[in-house]
Length: 437
Ligand code: NAD
Figure (cartoon, rainbow, N blue to C red):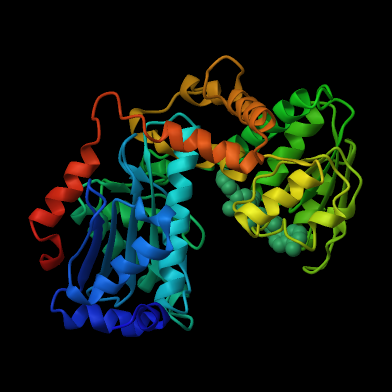
C-alpha cells in the first residue's frame, strides 16, 4: 500500500485492515537507534512517512492501535517521550474522517504533552490517547460509552504502564469511571473514587501567574488597573475573571452562550466586568484595545485574520493550540511586537492538577501551590520569565524559546525510575503484544 492510500483510508476501513491481520492490534515503535519497527508489514509505509516527512514525530517512542473487541472503535495510544516518566496525556473521543487525521492529531498532541509536562517540572513524559468516534449518534448512548471506555481501559492496561491516560475533549467525568474500572493506569478519576476533581480554577490561576510574569518582563507593573479582554466564559475563564478582579484588573469578556454570559454578569455584578454575548463568527474581541488578550475558548484563533487586528501587547490565555500555524503565526506576533505566552506553558495546571493524584490529597497542597509561587524553579511565573528572557536574548519567538526549554527539560531522566517506559515498550515488542488482544 502507498502512504497516501493508508493516510486517506477511513477509520472503518483501517479497522478492517487491522482485524484482517487476525490480531486487531498494531504498533509502530522507534528503537533507541532511531530505527522504526512495525508489527505488520502493511504498516511499513507508515514508518517511512514518519521518518521522511515528520522529523518531530520521529521521536515518538511508540504508537499503539487496537480495534475494540465488541465496540469496533479504533483506539490509539501515542507515546512520545518517556525520559521524565510514564507518558501522560488526556484521552480524546473525536470524529476523525481518515487515518491521517487520526495520526496527525495523536502525534501532535502527544508531542505537546511531553513539552507541557517538562515545562511544568513534573515527572511525567508525554502521551495522548485517542478514540475515533464512530459516525452517527451512537456515542451519545450511555451503554455504548461505557463499553468503549471500559475497552479503552483494558487496552491501556495491556500497555503495561508506558501510557497513563486522563480526561480530554469529548471524554466526560463519568467516562473516566469506566476507564478506571479496567485500568489503574489513569488519572483524572472522579473525586468520589479518590480523584482530584475540577482542574479549571487551578488552570485559571496558572494562566494569571503567566500574565503577571509577562507584564513584569515588559516593565509594565502588575495587573492592578489593567484591562483584560477574554474570548470565552467557560469553566476556566469564569474562574479567571475572579482571579483578575481580585488583583485589581478589569475584564471585558464575550461568549456565544447567553446562559454563560448571564451567569458571569450576575456573579460579578459589583466588579469591573463587562460581558458581551456574541455570534460564533464575531471576531470583535480580537480588535478590542486592552493590556492582555486571553483566548479562553478555541484553538487556532491566532491566525493571519486575527493577528493584524490585535490591539494588545500581550496574548495569554488557556485555550489549547491557539496558533493556527506554529511558526508562521508566532513570527507574525513577534513582528507586531506582541508578547505571546505559549498555551502549553501557561495552561499546564489542568494536567498538573490530576497528574499526581495517586500520591494523595491535601488542602492547599504544596505540590500544587508551588506552581503559583515565584520561588520554585518550575513555577509558571519563573518558567514564563525564563522563556521571555531567552526569546529576547536569542531573538527567538516565545513559542520557539518555550519549545527549546521544554525539549531540554524533556531529556532529564526520572530521578528514581530512569527511562523505564522505554524498557516497557521494548518488552511489549519482545512479547509480541500485538498478538495478544
Ligand atoms: P469550556 O467548554 O467550559 O469553555 C469554553 C467556552 O467558550 C464556552 O462557554 C463556549 O460557549 C465558549 N465559546 C466557544 N466558541 C466561542 C466563540 N467563537 N466566541 C466566544 N466564546 C466561545 O472549556 P474550559 O474548560 O473553560 O476550557 C477552555 C479552553 O482551555 C479550552 O481550549 C481547553 O482545551 C483549554 N484548557 C482547559 C483546561 C481546564 O482545566 N479546563 C486546562 C488546559 C486547557
